[in-house]
Length: 396
Image 1 (cartoon, rainbow, N blue to C red):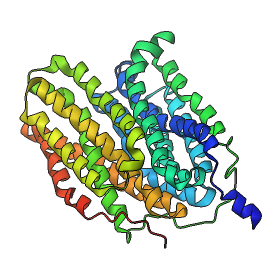
Image 2 (image 1 turned 135 degrees about the horizontal axis):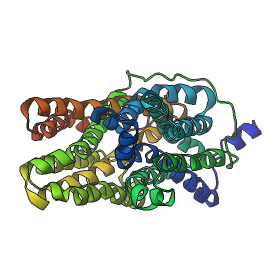
Image 3 (image 1 turned 90 degrees about the vertical axis):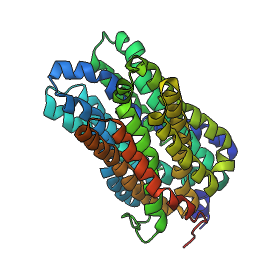
């Protein structure tokens, strides 16, 4: 009994820093492998003679896998525990990501991209499930903010450092660049076992399929879809939108401010996570501002349109962290991975499908604004769910 109690004693505050570093590095690898593809896509497409659709799939296929892979992640958490799942998922991610740099032809490249996406998808529910095992309850919101800051920094690092810094150091080889980004994650996976808490400790087998009887599963998933569809959708259609507005020359600056806004959002949450997480009014406010910011991109012109998109990115980043932080705070630790996986399954399915449906409508009408309108229409439809969120902790 004493050993069991010791194993479940939260770590002292002095151990928070190394745990925070591991959480941050894990968060970085939630996005670097995905968003290193867009800057390298022209080089990959030229060498392997990829069509535009296949070149785009280098980014969209892993995003789709973020939804598909949530359930294998939940299953692994219920069988081998969140720490082992996170380490296994990082190894799978490295195998897939590095294999892209070794791919001799298109089919191998796409399979490797799918494997990489599967690894990242399994990492996503493992991180919130790990928080209650490593952190005291009053540190859960901060822990979420830390790894989400790593994730959003990973978005910016992957997109912003690859071409100007890393690729020139590697003789401008896209293959070497992919491998160089991938392999350090093996060190992070190994370092996950340095904290003695929960080291290889067997876990009791628990349910792993989404609990659809829990209203939070669907509500949080649909609201995650609101945040994700507008962020990924505007990222995808920014060039077409600016071209239609006659300001395509501002695309580079627009994408810079659009993506760095999420970094500022994560820094804001590092400061205010404990005070903000769990407040329904903030979720409602950020969701509503996200919709208004997205609407401004098609209602306004010039820099005002870009500023509106940047505002949307900032508040959508805050909304994302507010939502992802909820599962470890609202349900028991053994239920956290299950709830997180269910919300990611719903959220990323919508983050992939809503912008795609919008794109199909825009292709049919010839007006890219219609793609944005589809994302706004979906978001307006699910916004009322935020008013019905029950954010009381469930102990059953």
